[in-house]
Length: 376
Image: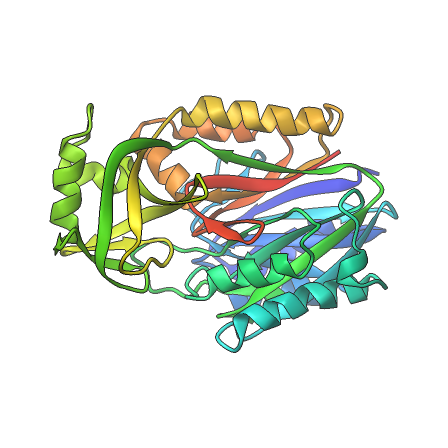
């Protein structure tokens, strides 16, 4: 039997979709099921059916605006995907933060400790060569950054990646995560894998910096109200007009993003929406932050090279790719008519994933990035 199984189910009835996933995932030696479902499907039903039927194996997952899979041409109809991992090569520990608004840094760190304890060890004794971790977080939470910082700080020696749940950008639909049958908003989960097989982290970011900068002079959470003392949307339109090959103003939410540079490293914030003169970003920024405008590089070529390098690092044969792919990558690909090409690059591997509102790389929340785990 394979150590990994990718499954997909399509339909509008959440119970039938969940039942189909369960039937395809059932099997001896199931150690972990990761389930991602279209946000139009009832998350409570998806969580309850899969968690109840597949236990005692841990079942984690979240809602998304779009699934990532090579198994079917997913169209307008809602779809759910799942990755099952099987066999005694793997042990799994999980830690949950059910209310991120309450002491998020401390409780996210404690979730990493709880995951280690489930493996019969401590967070300090987790080994980088034997353990790897991924996190899932409610994409509408204003505490995503704190979840990333706290969970990764709980075991600084580990590579931690992950992603956040999502729905359509302008939708008010909740974006819950689920753990063992329970769907939760304003929550996060950290999953630690103890493996005798190589598991490698993959990250891919294709944006490149321009020489254009702006200072945030008014902001509230994820909404930037002013740049350089001017209404934010108009000011960004002026700035990108000076970039060679810049796009028309009505397309700049797709064409451009922001990055705050810290120690020479760009921390990208995608532009999710333009609300009048406000720019709604995928992550919070504060007044006084200096933001550099980023433009797209080679999305397809960079993705191809980074996935190939990760596959080579595990010996060239991949059993599973768990992918956290920023929704902005897919919006950009659609705008550039590269959607099929991006899907084809992912489909070179046995991939199960989701479109995210944000991606975790260690202690940092980023956007416009692919992160994930490649399993030998």
